[in-house]
Length: 114
Image (tube, rainbow, N blue to C red):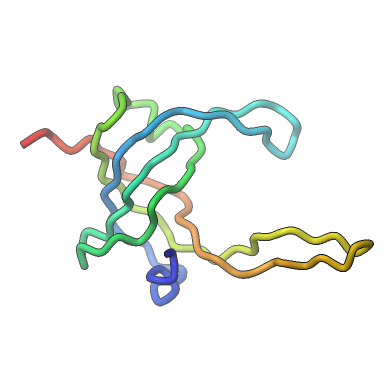
């Protein structure tokens, strides 16, 4: 579903999304890090759905907002390409492929209810 982002590679774009929940991941140093799950990510300029969900690190931009389930957010983020998949050379498994993500979210605001 993220193929819509391919044409916007390395551009900073404004998006709207819905907060779902918090999560946790282990960072590269082995420590636990809090994350944020957003769903229904929409490109505001074109009003198109670009991803059904995305995970972000719980950064200072998110800390300033009282995040509860179903809160609508607007933010800017850069479109980046990354490699996903699994490789096991011993079993000759290689299902890696390129996909697109949003990184470095900034100017995060809560959308007022209308």
